[in-house]
Image (cartoon, rainbow, N blue to C red; front, side, top):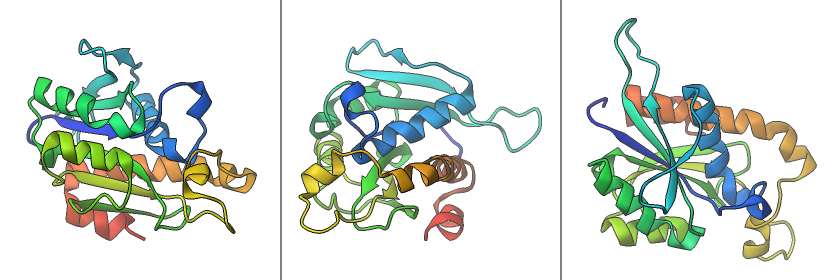
Length: 198
């Protein structure tokens, strides 16, 4: 699983207004991975995304781990695909080495699932990526946010901040998702699903 560069895309909306929203869980997870790499975000020369380049910790002492590029689009969620396609082309990354981290309504908060391929389930970021890459055969780390309470509209729910209770657990959720991504890249999908899919 370690051959070639991996492109790890945190889906979300740019800017401080959206920073704490449920829809921006992908940004939070890529921030955690950037911290682990000890690197800062910088503008990619395409001008449409911010990136962090580095290597994961190797599983064998003295042997460098796989090369990764963390990415966050500077466009809104529903236009993520163009910047992702530009980065995949620039770094010569095939779709099966692309990982999208996104919020998932159909999974309860504090649970997650990792999979390869599948539909976009109404998620505009995934829809845009599928359209631009020409395939849905990329990995997804689906971080559960649950369904909106009562009659709240889905749109309002995903573009709202995590609740006070959720915010206490959120660092552990983010940490676990980052662990899952590292495991996916170093140990493969099957082992990652066994370990992290809840």
